[in-house]
Image 1 (tube, one colour):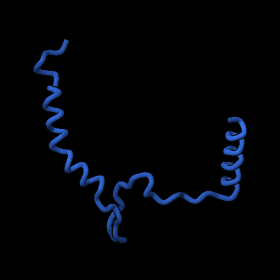
Image 2 (cartoon, rainbow, N blue to C red):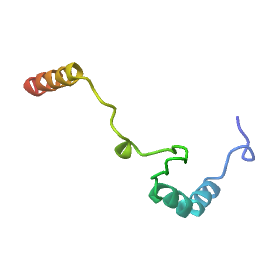
Image 3 (cartoon, one colour):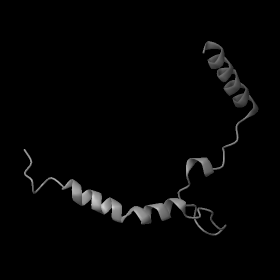
Image 4 (tube, helix red, strand yellow):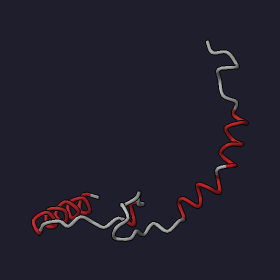
Length: 72
C-alpha cells in the first residue's frame, strides 16, 4: 500500500496544469510553418500534407466506401 508521501497531491497537479496553460496554448496556437532550412517540427494532423495515392488505391478506397454506404 502506498503512503500519502508517495502519492502526488491532486491539488498540486491541478496548480501545475493551470500554470502551464498559457505555455501549452502558445505551443498549440503558434505558427507551425517552417522555413526551407528549418527542420520539420510536429504538425497537427489536419495541417499535414496528404500522401499521394495511386489510381488503383483510390479506386479501391472508393469501392470500400461505396460498400460501407450500401451496407448502412
